[in-house]
Image (cartoon, rainbow, N blue to C red):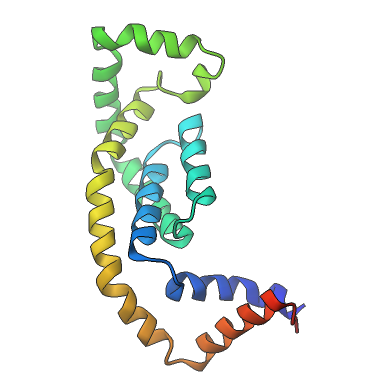
Length: 171
């Protein structure tokens, strides 16, 4: 019963001071940025979210990226619409987009939507810079956060409770 109440706290503490590498943290944040920018009602956003939760990346950083960039995506919708309109109406890609739309899952991909196309292009353009900045940030800031939080007995207890729960000792 105690495990039910402490699990969210343990997950939060483990996300902050877990054993993830800065690379895993950066990948999680960059994938979260892509999911956050895209409108959520299409197959691309669903596949990127499954990649975020199905690979070995820092999910807490990914959720932080989703939260931050969902608001940025809302602000960039007008620009994304104009960018997506330019791409969709560009003559050389129209046969490819028409072929993709005629495929069985084509309408669910959402590339016929100007905002989805624009946000996808913005996300692809920002993916590598976001990865690099978040990797440098994780390299320098995460050890300091770890050292600061490990001073508190509650955090050490929660980490011990996580190990105890994995071994089957539930309170």
